[in-house]
Length: 308
Length: 282
Image (cartoon, rainbow over all chains, first blue to last red):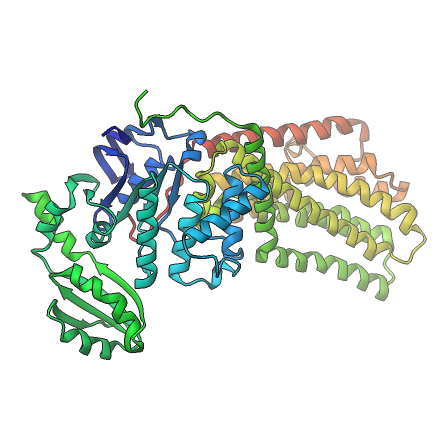
């Protein structure tokens, strides 16, 4: 397949700190997962690919063009950044519409595009509320809407599922899948393999700024499943949740966290466990507030891959 | 050309103008939503209240109040402070709030992005300072026979001169905001030492200050009565009018230097990287 993103010998240094180290990587069209623990260089990769950073060494090309100082290319790409930043005083619709206007659309065109984008991410009902009152899931959806409001050909998503509740997570996964199916190339970063796996089978593994592996998710899964997955659940009724989880065969261990209302669950069958979560979130008023994966297990796999 | 390569999209002029208009509007809205506006409104209220108080209590003469508040406090303190508070944050506020990403990802050249934001900032500060000028003249002259015949025409001239000064200040403080994170401290130090102290010393160095040209234009354009004119000249050490630059020179110097500084800043912004720290410090 012809690559849409080409990194050739790319390094990026922040003073003495290495963000990316001689990375050569060609990403083909379609949905690609960018996987790595915190500090792996995922965000640096995305900031280089979207022309926000200039490589210290090497060349970066997207759709065959250089990205640095190429504003015309920005019409073809979109980025959902990791940072939870907005113009808080705006409504969600106003924010997305402003982003559409900044992409060069006229007033009516921008309004229609913002309507479409907000509908696509399931925010129509709440789009006229101020962003500052949004939940984490709504904020992630709104960030995604601004990234796709100008209908880009390549979409970069930086940890789009972080901190979302199970329902929002499910919806966002559906939206990203639909975008991929519609012909938009998507690069989605995460430090959670399960998240990436639910979106694509093609993944790129980064660790400490270097390419560790690239290929089919199955090969990586086999390595990772040797280590228990650690998942944090935040829920007001965490004791009831713990007692319910204790009866599940796929749960290897449960630990109460120091922070309020938090449980750390260990499992070697993450697919089964994650599939159960939406049901748990809706049953018996347990109302999961937050779900996220600790990346210790992934770190162990990366260490294994790096040292093998 | 391979399937994945695309011809670079042509720059569409109307789309670019539309984007710049949206950026202008966004910047104006940002400036009018912050706490800064409230702080400045309170600051501007102080001299207005002072003028009303002094007129009512001690029957202070209007020309003395005009000199102290409109021709001294405003150009030396409030106007540059207004420019500093807004222009120094043109880029750094977006970096601080991590919203710059949303602007850099658009199809607008970076230098245009900077200049548009600076222009919007200039417009906001000019409106603020103009409002302050009108409010001060109203506080000083309201109810007097000179209000319509003297105060309002002078207010118009002062607004023009202050708008010119804001151009210089905004360009300067915009640059300061790009080169240092401590732009507020640096800006206040500049206002006090350069525009405050240096401008009052009768030597060639003061021609490097904005206030020097503001004062020269005030002396040439305000049509002050002889006594008031003499008071201004003596206080500012500018008694020999023939040695002062012409009005045209003053305007050209402030506009020219401001434009050069703004262009250098735009170039610097275009070449700068703005690394956004992510929650995982990735």
